[in-house]
Length: 212
Image 1 (cartoon, rainbow, N blue to C red):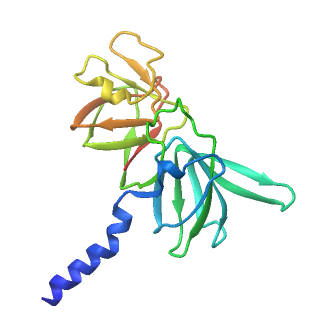
Image 2: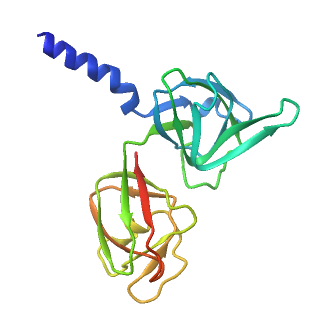
């Protein structure tokens, strides 16, 4: 009985970090709106069309921008504040990090349809070593953010469901059995096998996808 109770307590303790955290509903989301939230340590995705920036935090550098970040400067206070763009990724350090966010510039034409602000936990990372040869990469069901920045990758467009491997990028180069992708996000409804290679014979980067 004690063992069962301990398992239940551990599950309840970790539940907030596992679940989607919605911090501001659509009816309250407007330019200049502010909200305060306390998030468990971890990596998060700004799953909205809003840019957000941290007006202040309860501890210095407890919010670190990781992808698609920006900085807001206040010359009078001689301070800078971390910002995270739509679909940007940031990390919370420490267990006592309280963040006071402000909303900026809602993008009506952006890739996300949600008008509310929602922060979602990154559950794991997938790494892919690129080369001049095709590499088979398995994506399980879920959403993935591409962490390769402005440099994309090449997809074998003769394979079934190759469009899933392209993500939400626009196909800007197609030559034979290859299409170049520069996605922001991949949505995988059912598991898929992607065939991926580097942009050139010299492209030997290790790219990453964050699943959330």
